[in-house]
Length: 406
Image 1 (cartoon, rainbow, N blue to C red):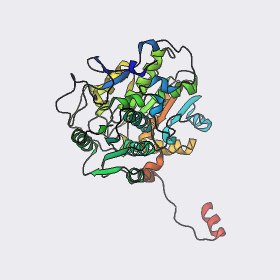
Image 2: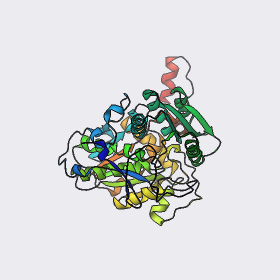
Image 3: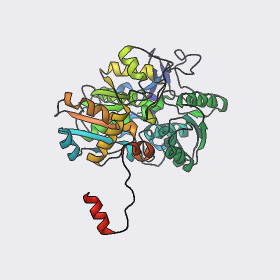
Image 4: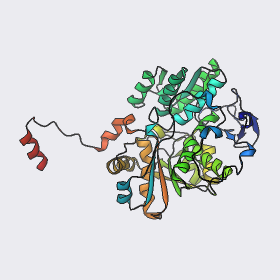
């Protein structure tokens, strides 16, 4: 097996290309101006033809066999293999038999984005690139900063200045060059592309860099290996749509390998205050003037840069998309915390809110997986909106007991 057998393929025109450091979007399908629009000509990695039906049973996969970069180039930091948790208490409360939480808050920087950063870092090392640029609402930024630190690479981060402070501090702790922007994620995205064009540094932006989708497929492999069977439903939090495309890509690859016979029902979940992909999927309306205001900062995106591809992927997978309110997101965050002991950030809780909204319409014997993409400690301010911090007690045990009785 040679990694040169892996190719890029355009999601729009299906042309294939050799994987190289200078190719990010399909030269035929990309637009002259990318600013403020979903990307056209998004590329994904195609498995070599000899992989077809090569793995006909559930197994613990060596995921490196199915990624386009050799294992030797990956930094020595433990990304992936995150727990798939079947909380007995949560299942009992929900009335389900097989509800699972795929918790990516245990990744080194506390989020799902480490999966993509890990592969991008390996790609950079293979091609002799030491500087990596990206725009992020927060998690991809701290992720790339941390993974780059482990690899001895330099990260240049464009982030909205209003991003949660914990994520800003993470980037600085890892030694990244932080460039806070007086504007939103979309503005940071466009500026980071300009920066890469001027400097020649590798750009890691989601969807723009094909390996971001490829890296994010790995959770689907893990879920399948951990379950030893196929899931019936997978609930995915959605902002720009790259995690969504990555999850679907993973299950498509597993089907190609012969491991599964069909794709699980993928349920994309968005905040009703950040619903660009929902509107595009349901109403075929790609609103280029859309403005997001959700409390779930990790999925707060005006114009989803992977919008065209994500909607296409979801339709081809026969998936669906729903929205939840910000109040439902915060309630779901607390609900999952109280009944499973897993504290996930609002973007993760969006997927949980979607499950809670739909659970009465699902077979309670079905196997459902909620993708919890980030650690709740990344955004304490949002979590604090729905809990009451007690006032200090006097240092007297009788007084404490009397107040607790009341």
